[in-house]
Length: 390
Ligand code: SF4
Image (cartoon, rainbow, N blue to C red; front, side, top):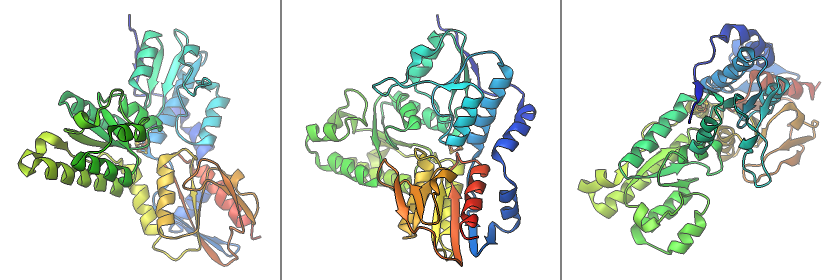
């Protein structure tokens, strides 16, 4: 018998954990920067901070709920099914509070068997798959569900597609936890990572092609039994909430044109459902702030956030498209010296060391951070950069 207990609103302990959260994640330097119009100069280095950066509402809420959970269940075994957010500092603080991450098996899947009846399990801000939730229900756990409402909004959308026999085309990364959770709610889905992949699919819809090639290309990015000839006749667009908004819009328009061209304008509604507005506000604000920041003269950009953080990767992409020298780093430990910095290139899974990265003073360095980066991490990095030219 399924007997889940879900907690979706915290435990009324927000005021109790507020002090802990401020001490762990806030920073006086960031307050000083904001008072100075997001600009601060020391030792010949001017730092310009993006207008919107760092912790978003959904992350703030998820981290606060995790802290409340520990207070509410001081003696219980507590698990998180995944990193609560993509930030190493936050995740290490949770480990210190004896909130354990479910280990991975050799094949890379989560070892849910470690969870015992009565354990408390926290679901991260980007949600969990239907299969995981069913498993936890069967185990009779207490589930603290921190899924961001922006993410559940997309779930509602793909569930509606399924009810109307539409295939969900999801703009996202097939291995990202949020997209895994979203696709588990769609009966039939195809995940496209970018406009280029979407164009390939659009050509297939219009002109046909090799089914084997299609299935080989999207083998990790479509539902079981996907048939491109049958399953691309009625499509609805959804997205991972942290993708580049402009790209999601272009993909939506591309498929709208494609279906109109194939089935005629009067039949469009039977074959196409638009993406709606499902890029979250926080992602949008950070992307807009980044677009504003890169219009100012600048020698270098530092983009701070977890290496597996999708929204941070997109901020990096904006800087690179502008042609700015820029580095995606996740913590102060990436700054090895004034000569060397460890960073993650946009394309590539492994970090690299770049040399001679810091311009001579006077110079201007732009700084932004993904939605899962605490102010304290941003501040430590800025302090460290200032100290390199003392
Ligand atoms: S980035 Fe957006 S969708 Fe993700 S947790 Fe923050 S507010 Fe929610």
